Length: 306
Image 1 (cartoon, rainbow, N blue to C red):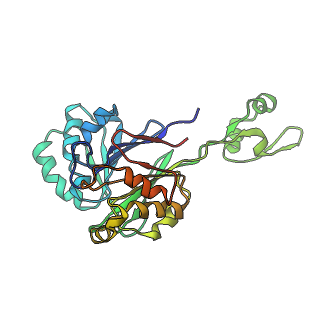
Image 2: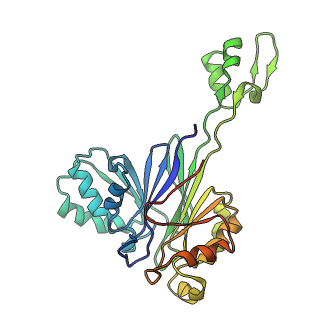
Image 3: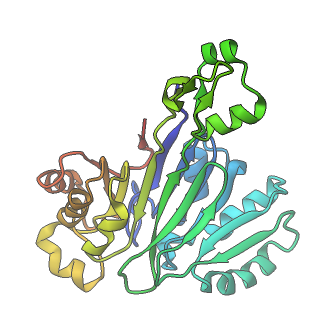
C-alpha cells in the first residue's frame, strides 16, 4: 500500500470571506507529515473541523503577506502554546513577516513554550527552501501586487527494496545491500553479475504538488510545473472579468487551465474565488473546456495522489 500524499482544502476564497468559504489555507499530508500552506483567518478552526492534529504541523509556508493568507498565524501560534507544544515551529515567508509578527508574539505569546523560527524567502528567484529525508520544497516567483511565491513539494526517490529470494539465496553483506538499494549491481560468489533491476523491486514513483496563488497569468512558470502530479492555481475570476483579473494581478479559470495544459500536469485544482461569485459551477465549466481533469477547491475537499 502506498503512503499518503494528499492535500486538504481549508479555505478557498479570496480576500473577503463568505459564510461558506474561508480565506486561503491548505494542508499537505506527505506520509503523515503535515505541511501548512498559507494561513488565512480561521485556519485553526478549519484544522479542527477537518480533524487534523495541530501538533503535527512543524513547517508553515506563506506565499505572500496579504492578510487573507496570513491573518490566522497569531491565533494558531497562540493555540499551539496553550496546547503545550514544545517543538520549534518553522515559518517560511517574506522577510517582513518576522518584523510584523515579533510585536504580536511579544504581546500575546510572552510565555510561548516553543520557538517560532522565521526563514525568509527570496521572492525574485526560484530556490530550494526546505529539504529533509523524504521531501523537498522549492519556490516559484509569481506576479502579484506584492512579492509572492508559489511552492512545489516533491517527494525524494525512495530506496529500492531487495527481492527476498535474492537475499535468501545470495546472502549479501550489509554493505552490499546498501549499495544495491542505491542502484548498484551485484556480483555473486560464482562470479555471475546480477543486474540491479533483477534483484530489486521498483520503488514508488515520487509524487509532487504545486501551489500557485496569488498571481497574474504567467506562462513562464510552466517550465517549473512540468509533469507535476497535482497543481493548485488561483482562479479569482471568470474570463469575462479578464480585464479585472489583470488589473488586480489575479487569474481567470481559463488561464489557470492553460497553465495546467501547457505544463502537462496530471490534475488541476482551482480556487481563491472572488466573493462576488456564489455559484462556482461556471468556474469548473470554464476550466474544463481547456483542461478536463480540473476540480474545485471547496472547504474540506481532499485531493490524493496515488
